[in-house]
Amino acid sequence: MSNTLIKKWEQTYSEIAPAGCYIALWLGFYAPEEELNTFPAAWIEEYTIRGLALDDPLMRWAYNSEGVIRWSELETLDPANVLKSYAAHGLRYGAVACVPGKTDHPVRSIGFFARSDREFADDEMQRLYRELQADHESMMNVEGTLTQAQIDALRLLASGMRQKEIAHALGISQSAVKARLKGSVRKMGAKTAVQAASIASRKGLL
Image 1 (tube, one colour):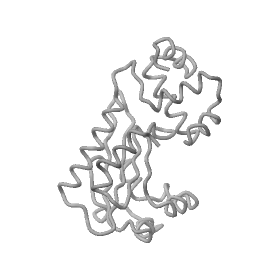
Image 2: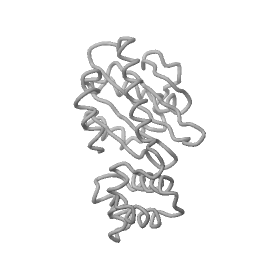
Image 3: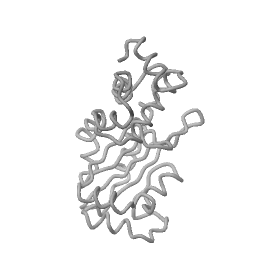
């Protein structure tokens, strides 16, 4: 998990969505460059084992929409009853938000936010979206700069580690490593991750 997102959860998101959240920043083909999941461990395990991402109406909405909406207002079909499964784990009320990517940065950022006691108020929904939007835009650092997550991945790559080893060392998926390295390549104006690591090293970023 990103230390920045963990701090953001502690300072902001936990206040609005006390039952938990899932945030994926700069979600591309492989995986997000930054990710945070504070949903109950039992739900994360069930979600993973059952492979519910493909059937999740929240994920479907996030990939095809922008803005923010309550889970109860979704018109997306849910044949696998994924939302009922969310509720069974205490995630009864929620909001899903998506900040779309731009032409030059097509990756998007998404957030699933939950409460167990009541629906989100309109002002809470807008605040969640603004916070996610700010997080998304913070990833759009000026070309030539890197996020801490990207630096961590590049540093390990420069030390000779393979992607699988980097994933194990950072406690993230190999897909997440690929996403971080891909972002690093773009920001460093490089052709490969190894070249990005070399450029970053020369710049004193590692």
